[in-house]
Length: 136
Image (cartoon, rainbow, N blue to C red; front, side, top):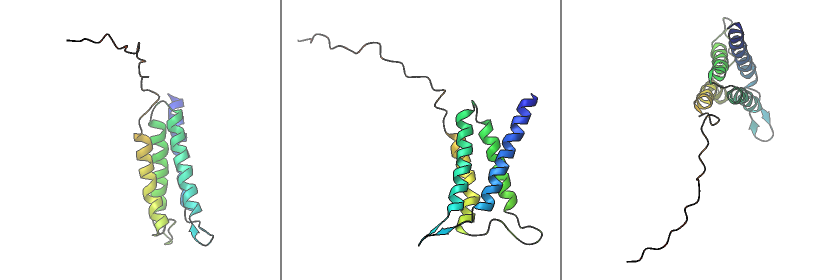
C-alpha cells in the first residue's frame, strides 16, 4: 500500500516537473526566416512522451492520469499573475496552445483504447470449401 502511495506521489511530481519546465520553455522561438516555436514543440513532445510512455507501460490508466493532473496543475498555477505582476504564460498564440494542448493530449491518451487487452481474433477453423453445385 505504501509503495502505491509513493508511486502516485512520484507520478504527480513527474507531471509537475514536466509542466513547470514546459511552462518556462514554451515561449522559446528560433527564427530561420520563419519563427519556429521550438520551446512549445519540445514541451509538448516531452509531455506527450511522458503520458504515452506511462500508458503503454502500466496496466491501468491511473499513472497517466496522475502525471497529467500534475502537469496540468503546474501549467494552471504558472498561468496566474504573480504578486509582482509577472506572468510566465503570456497571452500569445504559443501561450494559448500551451494552456489548452496538455488537457487535450491527456484526454486523448487516457481515452485511447487498450489494445493489449483485446482478445485475439479466432482463426477460422478451415476455409470453406465449395460444395457440389446443386442443379435443379
